[in-house]
Image (cartoon, rainbow, N blue to C red):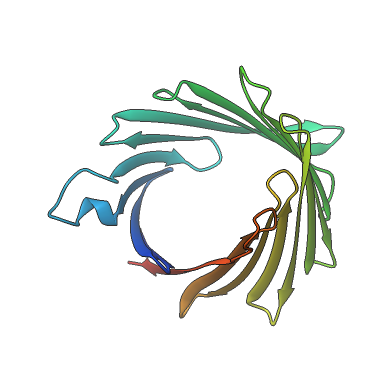
Length: 213
């Protein structure tokens, strides 16, 4: 089976587009991604990325123009009969390694941590889902000594409203997402920096279409 996805992003001063094509090959998935930079001004390798994935086990991404390889390995172990999802990510070109873990306590509660090796960049997050409709996500950045907050709510079945606030940067964000198998999905994002004297919101829109062949 072949799947294709097309994504477009619109902002007041610019627009961008990207496309992804994936093919199932037994237990593996082969994926190619490109952006508008790949085709604007004639075909080129700009924005082109290739990947091999075995779902639930590993992903190998290759950035063609940068000649950079990124490895991602996933595994799940049991801790006190609870699933602990572990992810190891290493980018060869950047020389950066990320460790990520998420402990699923139950269907409503999850605790996760993210750490960049060799730095003080560590983030802790708690996720609580109330009634299957509302989600609360406070997180703490140890490197910045700052809290971030996110809350989302499902309404009308396919719509999700989400609000975020970054205390260190004083950024307030609002999102409205609608997903539909027939009409694709779209997202409208508005953000404003409350620390700026002129609090002018930034607005952008994203649309995504998925096809199966």
